[in-house]
Length: 186
Image 1 (cartoon, rainbow, N blue to C red):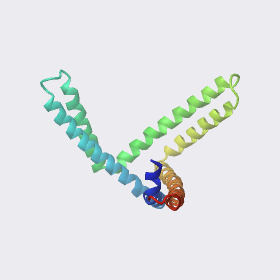
Image 2: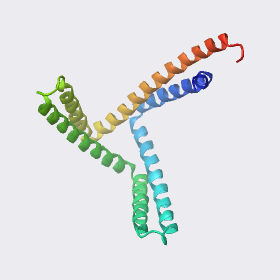
Image 3: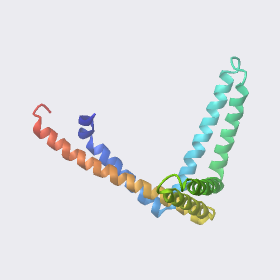
Image 4: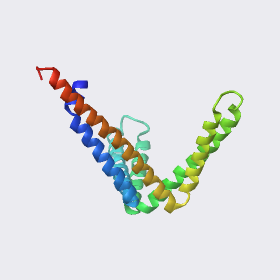
């Protein structure tokens, strides 16, 4: 596997460069980034719903709960059509779900830190994590800030991921040169 990685160092490097480009794009055009994600979700939900319906009808005779797949298929098609026809609404709903989750998680983390303060050291890190979650959740409650926050997080993650893969690819390139220089068989 090591030999395979070093010989294909360029693919790892290219992957890192593409991730950096994507991350920068997400930071510069955050709304476009989220609209593309919603578009992919819409297409996925639509196709998944169609296949669930096909599966329901092809397994109709053998399964007593075939109708559950049929309902799942119609829900998937409905969700896909809504996402494709109204991406702004889809982004907003997703934003509120993530916001609610982050706030509830933060409150529970702070509660756990308070209960654990006598039993473990550095429980403040759990409380700080909870505070960060709550702040993130509250930021998401405001659609303009929330949409930008998600896009920026995606962008920053993609850039960090890209930098790591770019540096790994360059290290693999160096190792490939060293490997080829010491092994005359390659």
